[in-house]
Picture 1 (cartoon, helix red, strand yellow):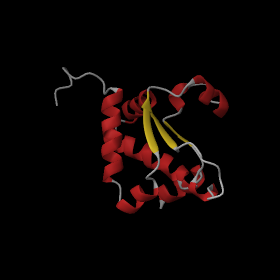
Picture 2: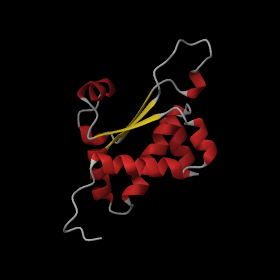
Picture 3: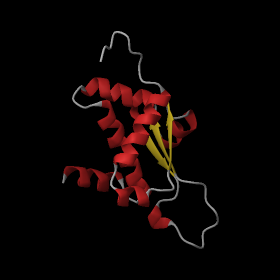
Picture 4: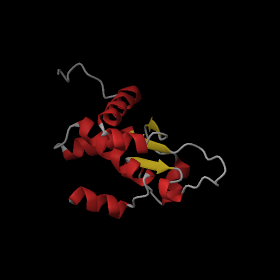
Length: 132
């Protein structure tokens, strides 16, 4: 690939990489995550960053928003679909800083991490699984 003529991956490029990453996951994983909407933005908006107490928007590469599977009930009112946000600029920044992982792998990592929250896993749970 000739990087002299390539622009940075666009939001659409990221969406395509996220879609490919999702489709490459095991069927049982995809089935459980089936109703999750995946959205790619450049950064989290200011309200999200404020809610999370994050000052530097480059610190947030992804976010799960919704009611996780463990807290859902058939008695609940209709809820908005769960969403996974992938933030392009912070992911690109981490990819450049690390230099030891392919962009598609990093996008997959962030996507799987956020879907883990959809399953009801905490950050600590996810880190223990990754370390195992």
